[in-house]
Image (tube, rainbow over all chains, first blue to last red; front, side, top):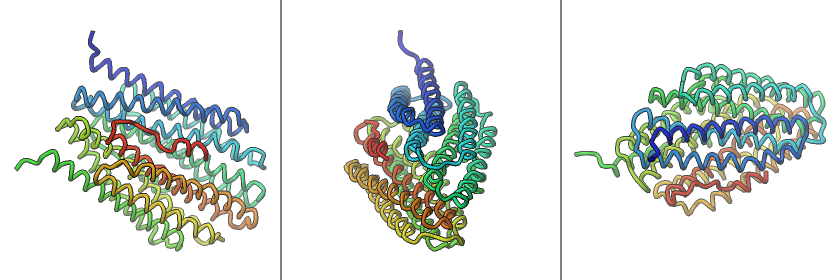
Length: 224
Length: 224
């Protein structure tokens, strides 16, 4: 029995969801390793990134073969282009998780700021919820989630801004925290970037739905 | 006279090169505004980002129409996919330039570290050279520049690592620099990210040339 276009598309959707679940778990494990000062767990996150990269390469090949061999049009074409672009953002989210995991070894053993670590845990929870929402939306290519994602990302930006100020003040109070503080700044930056990638994912949903290429949350971005 | 596929492809190449020149100028102006504490120039960089985003949207539409309407195959198909992906990375490089420009207002008026600002100027020069090389390679889709780009990015990573340590030490010597230091960390991070995007651009050259999807400099990345 020949494999139909719809079968292939369903396979692509499944690959993307699998990759998303993988990446969400990486975010969870990376901030856990960071907050628990667990270098072994951090190393596992780094090792597991190979699988995320393979996920993306596999998805890309699949998507490009679908375009080249089946020459889809209209919505089908746009959905595949969206998967192609979404795979790249998802892979970069995975890279950010690795970046956070690598901070574990850099920060370990230095005087820390517990309140900042609490915020990092909160930001992570928030981001994983956003990722869950977007993965759900990708199963039906329903773009109506986009405004909510932009709002949620706005909250992540606010966390980032206020925590950055708190970290800088923390250094002034206790300069011994400088090493951990440098690391916190990088970690909150990674989390803020993940939020932006999730916004990108929602932009591709709008493109697949309407054919319009949009830049969501650009004004929010400018406000930072 | 009907526009041929080659004419359209030439137009796409021209758009990409134009965008690249625009983005390179943005990087130059943004670090200049940062180092000169020139808030007016920083604002110009932020305003000019609209044009970079429009460049990308225009390129994307153009590339997607070319695929959808002309259904190119083999190398032609891969070249267009490469432009599509390259446009996204170029736009993100533009975002990083805006990020640096925005740091100008945040750092201005605070005790600074001159040696770190010298390194930022050096990193910027280095990155603009890499960008020039990659733009040149995109005019002929010649992938042989890729190993050199990875080597150059490795140097950027080394700058990033050593400067991060210098910044942290600087805080311990003079905690009054904490605000500027937070900002320096972000700026060197933006520059390091720009290096990664340029590596991505070289990966797409390899894809268009060979059809292979590669992850260059992944080991270097892991070493950070």
